Length: 126
Image (cartoon, rainbow, N blue to C red; front, side, top):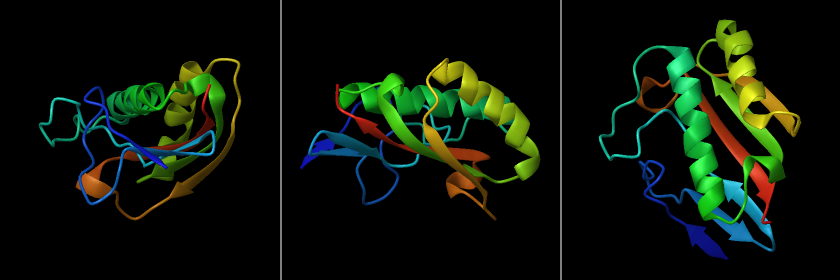
C-alpha cells in the first residue's frame, strides 16, 4: 500500500490520505475546491469555479499516484444542490473529454467546508 501526497493539490483536512495505491489501483479521497496553497478556504461560492478547481485537484492527485483522468474507472460526485447537476456535468465532461468512466452522483445535505461539489475517483495506475 502506497499513500499519496502532493503539494499540487490541497492537503487532507482530516486523518486520511489524498489517495492510496493498492495492486495497480488508485483510490482517491474526495476532492473539494480547496486551493493547493494551504489556505484551507474553499474557492468562492460559484459552483463553476469550484467544479473546475475540484477537477484540477483530482487530476493532480491522480498524476502523483502515477495515473490520470484517462485511467479513471469510476467517480462519485457529491452535490450540495442537485440543481447544479447540469453545470457540474458540463465541467466534468470537458475535463474527461471522450473518456467516460462510470459514475454516481448524489445530493448531500452539506459537504466539508460548505463546498458545493466533491468528487472522488478509482483509477488504474498507468
